[in-house]
Length: 445
Image 1 (cartoon, rainbow, N blue to C red):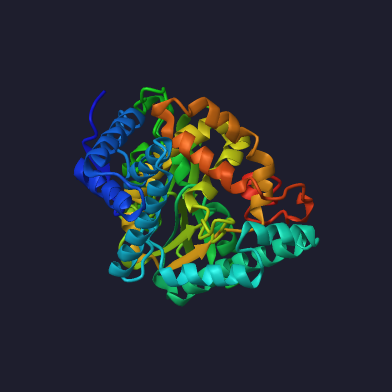
Image 2 (cartoon, rainbow, N blue to C red):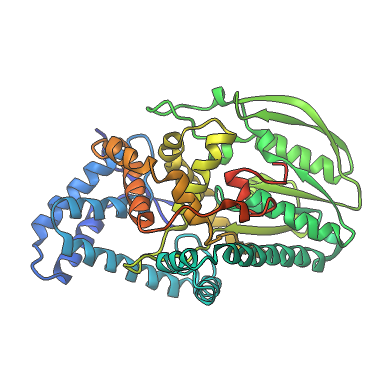
């Protein structure tokens, strides 16, 4: 077993791993809790964290989040529940310090803190800021009203994004819709297109997903899994060549990618951008500078999408945005990409690694942010997925190479457990963002 040598920091940079930082954090948590332990025990636990991390991420570089999750798990497994609690509090306080230092920017996903507050305030006004609140809405028969309110808020934000593009004038030739996996980029793009079209702007989609290399050309890890979340899984050179040609008024033939077979066919879709058209790029890595290096910054408009959910449980713990998006993707992948729920769960560490390396470092210069979190999703997500989490917990609990899947499944299952289900999904409109993931949309994806 190899030792942990590097970690991915919150700004996406790779740093040298230092076990003493883990030891000191555990020791401080022990000192802050009654009946704690000494430095020697903190050192022993830090060694166990390192061993567990090395087992779980043998051929990968763990993130700071991954490491901290394992610290919490090791403390609880060792029976140090009070110390684990103190560590969680310590971890939160460090987050608050980082936010203040970074000018009120949320540390993990680099979203303006003021916007997060606005999301929480909207949720509180509509009674959906907590599991208990959503349960009450269901019990009172007001679930359809919540659906309508959530979809109305989201649609208005998409329209505001379109208006912002129009405010930039005719210089914008490329609109980049970017954000982490399953944040709802495709539907947001469509709704923004609708807004721009009503104002006389002709739009043309540039489908980056067609530029994936053949899946067989990607390296495989020890699990036989392909890392197609990295921007290097895309033919970046061809993307830039086609972007440059399109903005010069030339005709190109873009490729076509079949997700069922993992195969790409070149020169399939003929495309030409007219002088009165705007090119739209819906791309996971649209903010990654190399992706559009052939286009000048003055010609770009950057829109960022994220599930800025503010949903808490009875312990005042908030559901992580990444866990929300994981559930969306588990459902969508099962019917659109022929992936099992377990496939998506065990692949998610690639998603997070890629987000932290190739999305977060580049979102500071975006022009607009859309919140795609819809509180009414969670009863449906639970109904479709809850049965799979106990199986994942049982399967991966003792498999230290799958600790990310185990810890994530355990966390999501515990969060969703008290939530009511059994709602009538027919009240969810066919043009709703949520239909992008559960199916039944009137849009073509």
